[in-house]
Length: 350
Image (cartoon, rainbow, N blue to C red; front, side):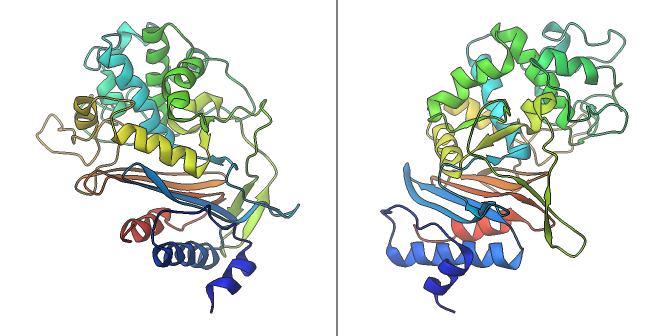
């Protein structure tokens, strides 16, 4: 089947002129189209930065299938848990300025934390070793309430007790990042969103933000696959303000790729901070995790993170050895793995 025919079939948007070899770009386009068709992803946006240059910015499918509105380069996708390393970068910038002690008891910055709990450091929260719970019935907001600050959102979650002694086990927790966002508000003297916009989003180009539904931003509708893998429209768009720090951000693919490049190249954090974020954490019993401060470290010399939530399956990869950033964003929840496509694109000779 020819690439031209697949382009027409998928409704793909031709990428801007790239400095990469035409054969490589064609292989990348074909990989994206075939992946989206195989896994029935309604809309995708993919970007690659190589040695500081945007070499691939490609879209296929629909942002709004019912209105036949195709994904555009400026379409923003939910990032889901890719929000976590973004928040971690914001925390590191505060730590570099001496405003946030990553190893201090979080109660220094979160005074509403119950006094009868064990001390938990910001670093432990960032590395999922603080004993804080993940999603659980009875404490998750219903997605209809908007929280103006992380302090407001944290007030709902902080009542939940720790599940075990900090630094004795690894357990993934989106809730922990809401606590981190609250600590960052205290340390910065600003609400979480305004701090992140000024210090983390804008310096990387401004196409990355929290999902603020009051803003008329070009964004996807929400699609979820049923048991047979067929995507359906979800008409309820939940408010993510209660978990902006751990799962509430959005971006274009190129915007997230440029943000990743700003991290890799030292524009947003120092080399020392990057090394610290990319160092696996060691538990009390000596066991080493495969997670640093906000980053998944399952592959050598690679910082990465995936995400999944209603209307999103996403992956971000920063390959430090290749000086490359790969972003894969899909607007359809399902069992497919966007990291697989990311690895395919990273293996190409850009």
